[in-house]
Image 1 (spheres, rainbow, N blue to C red):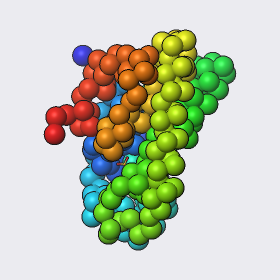
Image 2 (cartoon, rainbow, N blue to C red):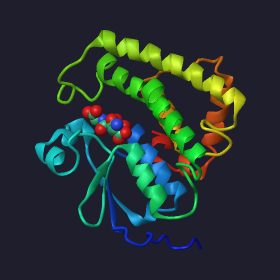
Image 3 (tube, helix red, strand yellow):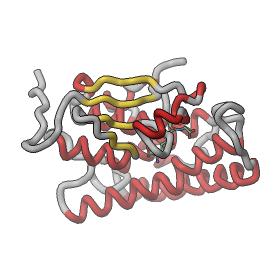
Image 4 (tube, rainbow, N blue to C red):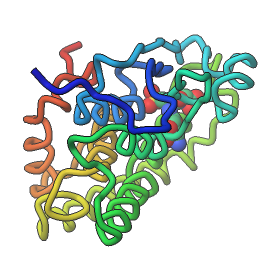
Length: 229
Ligand SMILES: N[C@@H](CCC(=O)N[C@@H](CS(=O)(=O)O)C(=O)NCC(=O)O)C(=O)O
Protein backbone atom coordinates (compact mmCIF):
# COMPACT_ATOMS: atom_id res chain seq x y z
CA UNK A 1 0.00 0.00 0.00
CA UNK A 2 1.69 3.20 -1.06
CA UNK A 3 1.87 6.01 1.49
CA UNK A 4 -0.91 8.55 0.96
CA UNK A 5 0.58 11.52 -0.84
CA UNK A 6 0.31 14.57 1.38
CA UNK A 7 1.17 18.13 0.33
CA UNK A 8 4.09 19.69 2.12
CA UNK A 9 3.24 22.39 4.68
CA UNK A 10 1.83 25.60 3.29
CA UNK A 11 0.76 24.15 -0.04
CA UNK A 12 -2.77 24.61 -1.33
CA UNK A 13 -2.89 20.89 -1.76
CA UNK A 14 -5.73 18.68 -2.89
CA UNK A 15 -8.10 18.16 -4.65
CA UNK A 16 -6.26 18.65 -7.92
CA UNK A 17 -8.07 18.93 -11.25
CA UNK A 18 -6.43 18.50 -14.67
CA UNK A 19 -8.03 19.86 -17.84
CA UNK A 20 -6.99 17.13 -20.19
CA UNK A 21 -7.15 15.50 -23.61
CA UNK A 22 -6.31 11.91 -22.65
CA UNK A 23 -4.35 10.70 -25.68
CA UNK A 24 -2.69 14.05 -26.34
CA UNK A 25 1.12 14.18 -26.31
CA UNK A 26 1.38 17.16 -23.95
CA UNK A 27 -1.28 15.88 -21.52
CA UNK A 28 0.58 12.56 -21.59
CA UNK A 29 3.64 14.36 -20.16
CA UNK A 30 1.68 15.37 -17.06
CA UNK A 31 -0.10 12.02 -16.85
CA UNK A 32 3.27 10.21 -16.77
CA UNK A 33 4.55 12.64 -14.10
CA UNK A 34 1.41 12.04 -11.99
CA UNK A 35 1.92 8.28 -12.28
CA UNK A 36 5.60 8.53 -11.36
CA UNK A 37 4.60 10.58 -8.27
CA UNK A 38 1.81 8.15 -7.38
CA UNK A 39 -0.75 10.95 -7.69
CA UNK A 40 -3.00 9.70 -10.50
CA UNK A 41 -5.72 8.58 -8.08
CA UNK A 42 -5.65 12.01 -6.36
CA UNK A 43 -6.54 13.96 -9.51
CA UNK A 44 -9.86 14.61 -11.26
CA UNK A 45 -9.40 14.65 -15.04
CA UNK A 46 -11.72 17.01 -16.95
CA UNK A 47 -11.85 16.24 -20.69
CA UNK A 48 -11.45 19.25 -22.99
CA UNK A 49 -12.45 18.21 -26.50
CA UNK A 50 -9.83 19.79 -28.75
CA UNK A 51 -11.55 18.47 -31.88
CA UNK A 52 -14.53 20.70 -31.02
CA UNK A 53 -12.30 23.64 -30.20
CA UNK A 54 -13.30 23.62 -26.52
CA UNK A 55 -9.80 24.88 -25.62
CA UNK A 56 -10.41 28.00 -27.69
CA UNK A 57 -13.69 28.81 -25.93
CA UNK A 58 -13.43 32.37 -24.51
CA UNK A 59 -14.36 31.10 -21.06
CA UNK A 60 -11.60 28.49 -21.09
CA UNK A 61 -9.12 31.10 -22.23
CA UNK A 62 -10.21 33.65 -19.62
CA UNK A 63 -10.74 31.26 -16.72
CA UNK A 64 -8.23 28.41 -17.25
CA UNK A 65 -5.41 29.17 -19.70
CA UNK A 66 -4.80 32.35 -21.70
CA UNK A 67 -2.76 30.27 -24.18
CA UNK A 68 -5.76 28.06 -24.99
CA UNK A 69 -3.98 24.72 -24.57
CA UNK A 70 -4.11 21.67 -22.31
CA UNK A 71 -3.09 20.35 -19.85
CA UNK A 72 -4.00 22.82 -17.14
CA UNK A 73 -3.65 22.00 -13.43
CA UNK A 74 -6.30 23.61 -11.22
CA UNK A 75 -5.53 23.72 -7.50
CA UNK A 76 -8.06 23.47 -4.67
CA UNK A 77 -8.20 27.28 -4.42
CA UNK A 78 -8.92 27.68 -8.15
CA UNK A 79 -5.40 28.70 -9.15
CA UNK A 80 -4.62 27.40 -12.65
CA UNK A 81 -1.11 26.32 -13.63
CA UNK A 82 -0.59 25.69 -17.35
CA UNK A 83 2.56 24.56 -19.24
CA UNK A 84 3.74 20.96 -18.81
CA UNK A 85 7.13 21.92 -17.38
CA UNK A 86 5.55 24.16 -14.74
CA UNK A 87 2.94 21.54 -13.83
CA UNK A 88 5.63 18.87 -13.53
CA UNK A 89 7.80 21.13 -11.35
CA UNK A 90 4.79 21.82 -9.10
CA UNK A 91 3.92 18.13 -8.74
CA UNK A 92 7.57 17.21 -8.13
CA UNK A 93 7.77 19.73 -5.28
CA UNK A 94 4.30 18.92 -3.92
CA UNK A 95 4.95 15.37 -2.71
CA UNK A 96 7.93 13.08 -2.14
CA UNK A 97 8.76 9.88 -3.94
CA UNK A 98 10.31 9.83 -7.41
CA UNK A 99 12.31 12.99 -8.28
CA UNK A 100 11.58 14.21 -11.82
CA UNK A 101 13.18 17.67 -11.98
CA UNK A 102 16.43 17.07 -10.10
CA UNK A 103 17.78 17.19 -6.56
CA UNK A 104 21.06 19.06 -7.04
CA UNK A 105 21.78 22.31 -8.90
CA UNK A 106 23.56 20.31 -11.59
CA UNK A 107 20.67 17.86 -12.05
CA UNK A 108 18.08 20.64 -12.13
CA UNK A 109 20.05 22.57 -14.73
CA UNK A 110 20.66 19.56 -16.93
CA UNK A 111 17.08 18.28 -16.72
CA UNK A 112 15.55 21.68 -17.49
CA UNK A 113 17.92 22.21 -20.42
CA UNK A 114 17.32 18.78 -21.95
CA UNK A 115 13.56 18.96 -21.45
CA UNK A 116 13.43 22.39 -23.07
CA UNK A 117 15.64 21.10 -25.90
CA UNK A 118 13.25 18.18 -26.37
CA UNK A 119 10.40 20.69 -26.71
CA UNK A 120 12.26 22.97 -29.13
CA UNK A 121 13.92 20.32 -31.30
CA UNK A 122 11.31 17.55 -31.23
CA UNK A 123 7.92 17.89 -29.52
CA UNK A 124 7.02 21.48 -30.43
CA UNK A 125 8.41 20.98 -33.95
CA UNK A 126 6.14 17.98 -34.50
CA UNK A 127 3.23 19.96 -33.03
CA UNK A 128 3.80 22.71 -35.62
CA UNK A 129 3.98 20.09 -38.37
CA UNK A 130 0.70 18.60 -37.09
CA UNK A 131 -1.08 21.96 -37.11
CA UNK A 132 0.42 23.36 -40.33
CA UNK A 133 1.55 20.39 -42.40
CA UNK A 134 -1.48 18.15 -41.87
CA UNK A 135 -5.25 18.78 -41.40
CA UNK A 136 -4.43 18.98 -37.67
CA UNK A 137 -7.50 19.47 -35.48
CA UNK A 138 -9.61 20.36 -38.51
CA UNK A 139 -10.80 23.63 -40.10
CA UNK A 140 -12.81 24.66 -37.03
CA UNK A 141 -9.60 24.94 -34.99
CA UNK A 142 -6.85 25.45 -37.59
CA UNK A 143 -7.73 29.03 -38.52
CA UNK A 144 -4.36 29.63 -40.23
CA UNK A 145 -2.06 27.06 -41.83
CA UNK A 146 1.30 27.41 -43.57
CA UNK A 147 2.25 24.07 -45.14
CA UNK A 148 5.81 25.12 -45.95
CA UNK A 149 6.41 26.10 -42.33
CA UNK A 150 4.90 22.82 -41.20
CA UNK A 151 7.14 20.78 -43.49
CA UNK A 152 10.23 22.69 -42.31
CA UNK A 153 9.33 21.86 -38.71
CA UNK A 154 8.86 18.20 -39.64
CA UNK A 155 12.43 18.16 -41.00
CA UNK A 156 13.63 19.91 -37.83
CA UNK A 157 12.01 17.17 -35.74
CA UNK A 158 13.81 14.48 -37.76
CA UNK A 159 17.10 16.24 -37.01
CA UNK A 160 16.03 16.32 -33.38
CA UNK A 161 15.53 12.57 -33.42
CA UNK A 162 19.12 12.13 -34.62
CA UNK A 163 20.32 14.49 -31.88
CA UNK A 164 18.59 12.53 -29.12
CA UNK A 165 19.87 9.31 -30.67
CA UNK A 166 23.41 10.68 -30.29
CA UNK A 167 22.66 11.70 -26.67
CA UNK A 168 21.32 8.25 -25.82
CA UNK A 169 24.39 6.54 -27.29
CA UNK A 170 26.36 8.19 -24.48
CA UNK A 171 23.97 7.89 -21.50
CA UNK A 172 21.09 5.80 -20.28
CA UNK A 173 18.60 8.67 -19.92
CA UNK A 174 18.06 11.95 -21.69
CA UNK A 175 19.52 14.20 -18.97
CA UNK A 176 21.90 11.78 -17.23
CA UNK A 177 21.90 8.50 -15.36
CA UNK A 178 18.31 8.60 -14.05
CA UNK A 179 14.79 8.93 -15.45
CA UNK A 180 13.54 12.53 -15.36
CA UNK A 181 11.17 15.11 -16.82
CA UNK A 182 13.50 15.28 -19.84
CA UNK A 183 12.77 11.64 -20.71
CA UNK A 184 9.05 12.33 -20.37
CA UNK A 185 9.29 15.19 -22.87
CA UNK A 186 11.10 13.04 -25.46
CA UNK A 187 8.52 10.29 -24.92
CA UNK A 188 5.77 12.82 -25.72
CA UNK A 189 7.67 13.80 -28.84
CA UNK A 190 7.67 10.21 -30.04
CA UNK A 191 3.99 9.87 -29.13
CA UNK A 192 3.28 12.88 -31.37
CA UNK A 193 5.56 11.45 -34.09
CA UNK A 194 3.41 8.31 -34.13
CA UNK A 195 0.22 10.39 -34.36
CA UNK A 196 1.51 12.18 -37.48
CA UNK A 197 3.07 8.98 -38.90
CA UNK A 198 6.58 10.43 -38.69
CA UNK A 199 8.72 7.33 -38.27
CA UNK A 200 11.92 7.45 -36.22
CA UNK A 201 14.73 6.82 -38.74
CA UNK A 202 15.89 3.18 -38.57
CA UNK A 203 19.47 4.30 -37.95
CA UNK A 204 18.41 5.94 -34.69
CA UNK A 205 18.93 2.63 -32.89
CA UNK A 206 19.84 4.14 -29.50
CA UNK A 207 16.71 6.32 -29.48
CA UNK A 208 14.55 3.37 -30.51
CA UNK A 209 16.08 1.10 -27.83
CA UNK A 210 15.61 3.79 -25.18
CA UNK A 211 11.96 4.23 -26.24
CA UNK A 212 11.33 0.47 -25.88
CA UNK A 213 12.81 0.70 -22.37
CA UNK A 214 10.62 3.71 -21.54
CA UNK A 215 7.51 1.83 -22.71
CA UNK A 216 8.30 -0.88 -20.13
CA UNK A 217 7.62 1.63 -17.34
CA UNK A 218 4.07 1.26 -15.92
CA UNK A 219 3.81 5.07 -15.66
CA UNK A 220 4.25 5.16 -19.45
CA UNK A 221 2.49 2.08 -20.84
CA UNK A 222 -0.58 2.67 -18.64
CA UNK A 223 -1.37 5.95 -20.44
CA UNK A 224 -4.28 6.26 -22.92
CA UNK A 225 -1.78 7.36 -25.58
CA UNK A 226 -0.35 3.83 -25.51
CA UNK A 227 -3.68 1.99 -25.48
CA UNK A 228 -4.54 0.14 -28.66
CA UNK A 229 -6.89 2.20 -30.84
N1 LIG B 1 3.55 24.69 -24.21
C1 LIG B 1 2.34 23.99 -23.85
C2 LIG B 1 1.80 23.27 -25.09
C3 LIG B 1 0.50 22.55 -24.82
C4 LIG B 1 -0.17 22.04 -26.07
O1 LIG B 1 0.18 22.39 -27.20
N2 LIG B 1 -1.16 21.18 -25.85
C5 LIG B 1 -1.95 20.62 -26.94
C6 LIG B 1 -2.61 19.34 -26.45
S1 LIG B 1 -2.22 17.92 -27.39
O2 LIG B 1 -2.15 18.36 -28.81
O3 LIG B 1 -0.93 17.47 -26.95
O4 LIG B 1 -3.29 16.98 -27.17
C7 LIG B 1 -3.05 21.58 -27.32
O5 LIG B 1 -3.70 22.12 -26.44
N3 LIG B 1 -3.27 21.73 -28.64
C8 LIG B 1 -4.40 22.49 -29.08
C9 LIG B 1 -4.03 23.54 -30.09
O6 LIG B 1 -2.82 23.80 -30.20
O7 LIG B 1 -4.95 24.07 -30.72
C10 LIG B 1 2.59 23.03 -22.69
O8 LIG B 1 3.76 22.66 -22.49
O9 LIG B 1 1.65 22.68 -21.97
